[in-house]
Picture 1 (spheres, rainbow, N blue to C red):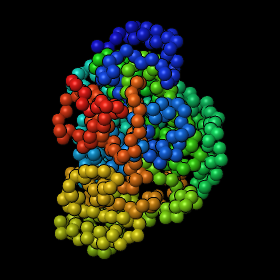
Picture 2: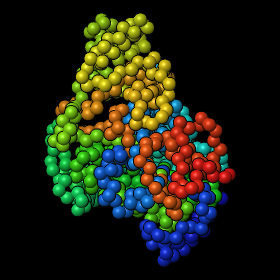
Picture 3: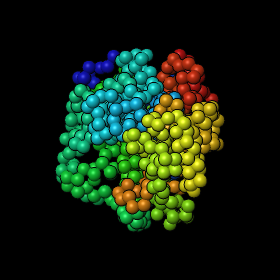
Length: 558
Ligand code: ZN
């Protein structure tokens, strides 16, 4: 059972007094546990938009937390193997071990024409059946996640296991934590909040006071590491100048907090405080702490991942992860870390074109669902009573044809759209739901999958569109003239699919395995270490042997 709070505090004081436990020291003595005993705490860190390309570019500069994790098992070619490389699907794979085709989390948002809301949009982490839910303030829920997370499995085995998740983003908390979260916090304007009706605990209240005081006071521009020097160069990204930002926080301007490394620091601080508040890692029932660090993503979207801003963020991320690990060390916890990402990213078109990638282009706004609907209406003369013939989000992904017209009319609209899309120079592929439903679930190395395989891995016949549209390599699905939101992800290409996967535990034999693996391999790997009862077919991924020597961590004795 968990220690009483007084005993826990005493243990913390003793640990802090022990001279050998210099915070962050790489050679601090491990806690006394059997070499192959299950760790008492799993710390699952997702760095939103941390592509394998960013890891490759910056890994030699890391000296803190991300340096230590590189002493563990390093998989530089992890795959979010599906086509819909967005935040919800990506996070849903990490601790469930199943792909979006099985978890049902096919996109950040999808269309459900049976719901009452006029736009027919469903947000992945929303209970849209709750009348209090709205697009601005969704009632956060895991009801759409058709899979169990590692935390769910541990709690089902032993209710003493704790399942805690914290992030800037609600969807990260839900997709990594799952259905049985003991404490879950995400950011809303003004501070960290939790599920409907769950009061914000003391740790989060303190975090909110600190964050709000920082925003009120402001902060100077951040230091530029020597290895970022020379990167400061302005690029006009469609009317927004990027490439010189240093994250000065103007007094009272919250965006300077949420689009900056500071938001990761706040999430990490809250995660550490929750280790104490929730007494994580202190008994034989293994706990899970999921930490979603989102600043890499907010910075990537606002400035692009290829400039000075991201260089500074990488340095700050390294420090933030280092502080988290040092805090766990100071508490003498036996923990295992896995760090990965929900998807990769692609730099702003204008900088790509300056840097030897002339095929980078902005997407054609005639590809939006709305424009496609107008085109189909014009070509067929068919109209829907609602006024919308085609539903969907942005320039790619799922396209849904109105259910208010007859099956024959829908078939005609579908044919017109397929012909239009297949002849468009920015479209790499368009698949019908029927085609994808007839495609077997992919296997083998994800780097060799066809586009259809990738689309199949995030296809759910209950939720996916009548058509799935994939844009060509190098097409940024942000129209010219958009300001402030300069780059994004979501494509089936490897710049969006490849992410690093790093495992670290004190005392483990490190190794680097360059062969591709998948993020769905993480859950079965941890399940084996934790001796969870699983059966064939529970996961889409496979157990990775983390032993690094002749032993095999996938074959541990119960
Ligand atoms: Zn994301």
